[in-house]
Image (spheres, rainbow, N blue to C red):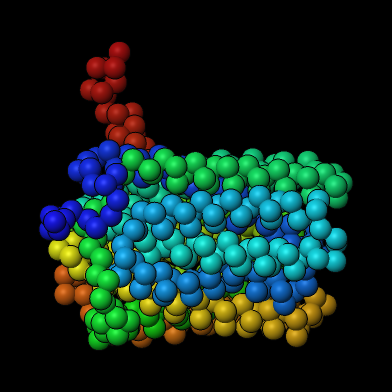
Length: 484
């Protein structure tokens, strides 16, 4: 007897009816734990672990920065498996728990291995964690697309992102404070190891919290071939344009993260807590303030207009770090924050565009193939980016110096300028991308800047209105009589 058409081809435990509100609530709560894990393992602790504990050289530091993206190559076989056999929920739970648990052996490296093996073990284990992450990604994103109604995805995931940012802000700053108080090398190593082990526990709780949500909408087809699976997405001209955009975007940022931390420690010479404020806390605060507005823009105007506006506003972002100097560390940082605010829009729009493509309602089986092809593109671009950043840094060396507009320029600054230059290559792909449901891009641009101007005007004119009102009261005898 065959399963009903509206039931997913999964285990009986997953055939319970979906309660959308409960599922959305569980997704929000679970992400609080997941965000804590992510911000512990991707912030200042990882950079210090690699540079001060493991003594990793500049080339491999660039590779380490790109590893979380390079693992996306595993999304391709995962997508094929999902299309043939289903079991989305099982795959993302097993792979997700394996990925988060990997931070326990990473934490144990200095305590169980000879020192000569440390940085190599970190690279290998981090690569394995990245592979597990991207085994999970096609399953979980396709599942998200079927759980969250399309009409509210922009707003839901902006609120979801806000909650994670608040948790990450608190957890990240607490870890940075602990690291600032680690006065010896042994204390630093012990603090980071404990933080990574705690992150693993929090990350596993994230996935356990999702267990009651059923799998819905996905139907496997054991006879589907690789050609059938990937024919639809590869025939989609707009999706090919999105792949071009995705590749150039990742090429520009894949190597960047670890070198920003090094720039703040080696050139600007700030404390670990201050560096965490500049790289983690302030960007999170900005994201919390703007992400819901970007989500509304996606729901109202579409993904393409949001991507175009956001991408134009991030072009300068990496180069702005050059103007963050030891004498004036907060001067050029305003330009960085503008870019940070715009990245929220790029991420929200990209995420929603991929969710729209990957939904499997109505028995559509090619949804995860969109995610898989995008993931493979990201992996290739990240690998190239990591090699590019590491090669340039290693070629110039720590002692290289130059100047730009009268400001000293180090090898970090060269990498920042390369990153900003590469971002311009993403714009032509977005211009060619077609999204029939989207409203005109120019109208979205007007909407964004009109809203920003209205808020700025309100901010500036409200105090002036109070002063004018007070002056009128002082000049009018009738007002004075009434006041008495």
